[in-house]
Image (tube, rainbow, N blue to C red; front, side, top):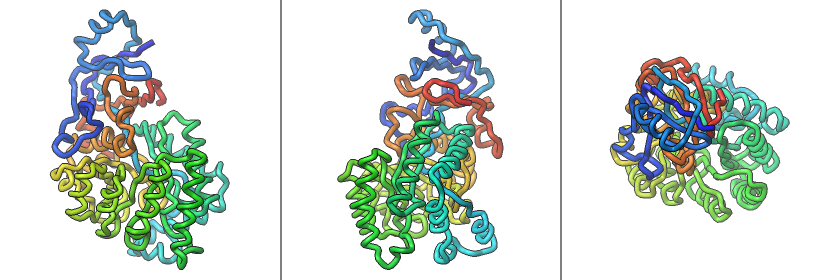
Length: 415
């Protein structure tokens, strides 16, 4: 039986008018309907204002279950398009060291950072990393996330990377969230290959990617292209192999320096380039032309005390900007998209409307699934949240608390 939400104080649709994303000035329009109504089963069947809802149901001989949403805001569930929530171990001590003035790069050079988590993952059982991912995914859902991307990248051997991807598959089969998997074997060079970079790249291309594809464990391949990690040329080789194998591609780009990674992502037609704290003007222009989504991760800049990505410039130059948590054990241990939206507005120069679109429809575009989710439009999946807000600006105005009261995924109430 269908369900009908009525008397919605603020119904935020993020309707993209069929384009699947919002770019530039379009990001200011969130498609609000006051006193709104939504009829749905697994998918959205009808959307409009409450005054027309009952007549629509009568004309179509529909007798839905009715839920009164007076004083509530209903909006698409958040699409967190960049996370690393399957891992093992803790890096809380490194966080404390950074607060005492030790840089992220220095800790990494000492064998910490990604490599510390790598050692923990290699020693852990698959069930252990599943347990960590499960806890974080359920917490993300509690805070309004209905779709989440999860990367591997903390194993850096064929066996350990497959362990992480198989853990992600277990979570996808078990949890109600929509989960997208990304292979990130090119997260860093493991210590045993520091002086043999070409050998490790060959392992990624000739062993890891073929196994990932054979077992159908990921939709995307990602590469960390930046100072101290993979060069542009190395990244291009890996990404081209992924594309030739049927995977879509993403890029960790220009997080630590202006490295030319955004330009490379545009050349490779990456679905998204992520981080972009030090993106160049040329990188912005090339990404706009290639229609690569710019995924910003304000929680990471906040945690590392780095400048925020130039969101205002990107939007004004016509890019489609998405927001994500980058939830990971080292540089941003936070799974709450409400916090990300708040940081993007108060510290990153975005408006409330832009941030909501970035966290929903453009997040879906950054995963290539905006035809299914990310906005409330007829025919799309009924993935939405009900919040204790009379109007959507309260989501940012009243920060530091969970304002989500209900989470619905594929038309089923999960929380």
